[in-house]
Image (cartoon, rainbow, N blue to C red; front, side, top):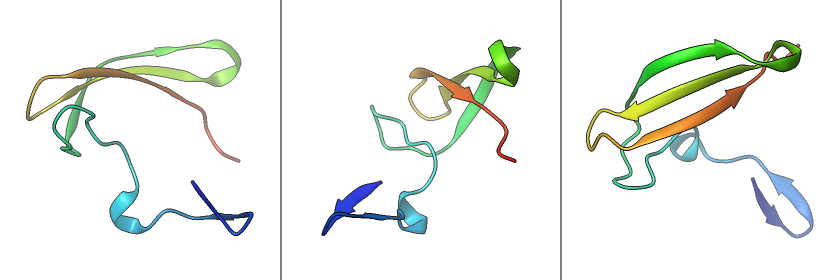
Length: 62
């Protein structure tokens, strides 16, 4: 999120979601998913365009 005039601003729709740091692509495939502590999930993802891999830590909201 961006800080503007000391208020948090929500990201625009076009700037939401994951984006590959190498090529800017927003399309990934999940290599594997595993459970982590306190109901969290760890997912290993791979960019469909350039093959760069990243790890995400997720938790359910609500």
